[in-house]
Amino acid sequence: MRAAVYQGNQQFAIEDLADPAPAPGQVVVDVEFCAICGTDVHAVMYDIAPVGSVLGHEYSGVISRVGPGVERWKVGDRVVGGGGEPPPTLASARGPRFNYRNEGFPTERIRAYAEKVLMEEWEPIAIPEGVSSAEAAMCEPCAVAVHAVRISKMRLGDTVAVLGAGPIGLLCMQVARAAGASRVFVSEPAPARAEAARRLGANAVIDPTESDVIERIVELSDGLGPDVVFECAAAKSTLDDALQMVRRSGQVMLVAITWEPTELLPPDWMAREVGLQASFGTRPEDWRIALDLIRTGKVTMDPLVSDASFLPLENIQGAFEALCQPSTQLQMVVKHG
Image (cartoon, rainbow, N blue to C red; front, side, top):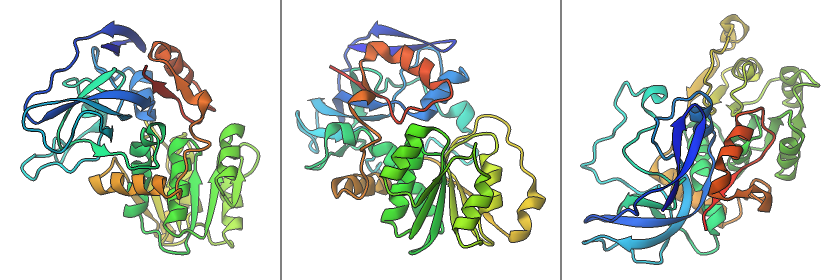
């Protein structure tokens, strides 16, 4: 099988690797689509992905082989590459002092920038009827948005702000709407992403390079500030912006992963007794909810994913080089085959 193997120094090589063989309790998934995640882009941009690793964790595919003892799946089943409920005896690899920067890119398994992926029987979940394989590849980032909204303090009728209209921001605004937000304001400077936010129903989209985003969003939210702000941009000032615009006793949800030092001036916002909550990753129930939101049309992948989003595995180097620059793309997806 072909795979994009990370070589270090922001370089990939397309290599031929041995096809995986399932052991008892394992399945092989032929990958159809794998979305390029921002965390993988950062791992390459900052050269922290391990040399020899095969990245890619937002994917869908078809089961092509099953190992002895597998009863849950059969050849031909369509699945999402994750979201399964681990057995109770499986200890979490993320201990109490887990450090994502140092431990978040393991080398022990080949992931979906390869044509085939080996999985434990419990790991994948089924793609429901009415959800395309391309849509299902976006289940994991949608589950990230679901997780952020579910652990936030957002309540029915709340006003929400989303900073950054990349894929996670656009998914957060849709999930917040599905969860009962009455108004969603979005901050985004890139025209294509801003237009996508408008198409997806944002009540207002503010260009922070043309307006004072804090002043404007506070004004739009009746002079009080939003109840919850989802920080999905990871730009140098956006966390501080979120803390300054949120209403008294409101909450800032840190969803984007910021890889560079970020300046904060607490006297600007701490007197309002605001809350700051980090959101990281997903839980199995978030994946199931995400798939149902996609199935019912409450979350749409249009305009996030279009024909222009897809690229062959051979073009992954150019895709990462483009994404490591200030990006206006909505989503890029490796299409196998």
